[in-house]
Length: 252
Image (cartoon, rainbow, N blue to C red):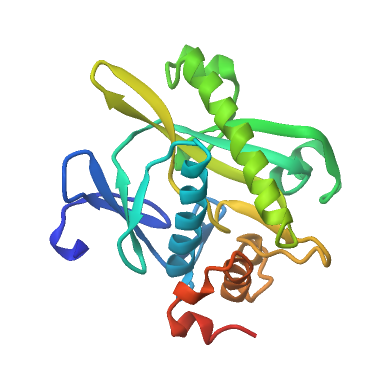
């Protein structure tokens, strides 16, 4: 289907095509894996299929509790129909436990609990390395208004509460996650909704009992078994029955 459609945008892990009706896009999940601003690259067969399914599951559940997002429906193994949004050029990172760049920046031991959840903003620009910015930068450069920042913070807290509970129920600790937001226009007004994806590509997920990493850090840190770990997350979420047998065959 997508081969006949106009490509709107291609990112590191997804491609956006024009949708079947105005105000919609088709989001295609690639098997490409990247880390360190695409300095490290690989193709991991089946990753796009798993992330498509996990993101569908999470976005559907979030819609159900009133966290509005761009997801409309899954079309096939690799594609979703989504609402077209004007992406706000920010990555919003919510951290519950010290890991990754936070540990490096502040000298915190990885795995140490934070005093409370911390929300950080980064300016979306690969060439600049997605630098961290403050609310002052965001409003000064008009990337988002004060009201939009308030809405983003409130939604991020709700997403964190929901995901923390969801994963805790299946023996997984939500260490941190990255989300993005976009504007949707209704007449003369716009509102902010959740966009992009929520998957093991964009979350740090550790097995609660063993501490084993079940996320993209397995690729970043050459830990191996990336697809098996992503599949384990899908299996625990109870969505393996919708997976093709080629993916299920990779389970150990």
